[in-house]
Image (cartoon, rainbow, N blue to C red; front, side, top):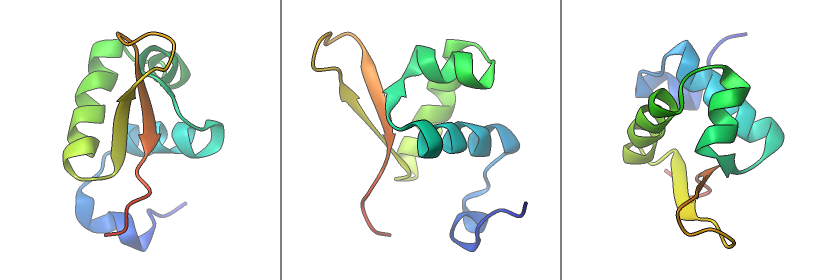
Length: 79
């Protein structure tokens, strides 16, 4: 499956796309849940989330039940 036109200029790797697919299909989740889903270390997922957040693709927020836990979601902001 080709990378969507909107994402081609963002220089995303297959692992970035895997992370985005998990969030798209399963909704917002924690770093640890994402790491388990794409089978990489949480530190690697944190780095990828940082990269995608700087590009405006992802949002991070504190969990309502545990402020130490970060919930990651796809950004709904345009452009």
